[in-house]
Length: 229
Image 1 (cartoon, rainbow, N blue to C red):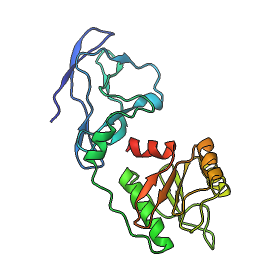
Image 2 (image 1 turned 90 degrees about the vertical axis):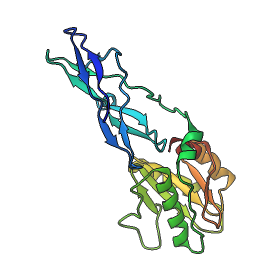
Image 3 (image 1 turned 90 degrees about the horizontal axis):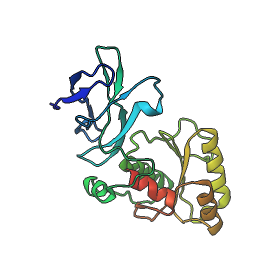
């Protein structure tokens, strides 16, 4: 059970005990928000969506998640937001080695067919922490731009023996833009020079796979996806 911490109210001056909330991490371990004992809380006048969440890493698996920012309702009527330890700033890349060590090794799928390539990408994204990775409910006959969808992601898997082209990257980016998502591309034969340059300019993460089914990040955006998980 989490230990209570003292919370001083800046309005009435009284101190109250507060037990930090505990949430279940995706790995199954309990995650107690590390509220700073004795730190000055902030008066909450206007609640915004962004400020209502806090980023905290699980000590068990190293995964960073978004959790409701802890609040306390004082008897004087003040609503207080409580400071939390280890809140990484946007783009924080702390402890990548710890996160990789804590995470189980990825088990690739040998690629023999187009379906195997999609399955390999699906498993890899789940390994990165995207738990709801699935094939889209509706696909045009003969295939389409998107082979997989996840929370905030649309994914193209190119299993052909020719490098993925700049047109493929641009179509994926446009599809993702219309869906308010991030387009991610996996390719078995790599990418043309123009496609890689265009992906960097559009912010499209690129992964390349070999026949063993082990994806590898090919640009900075893809590396960032791996580091965040």
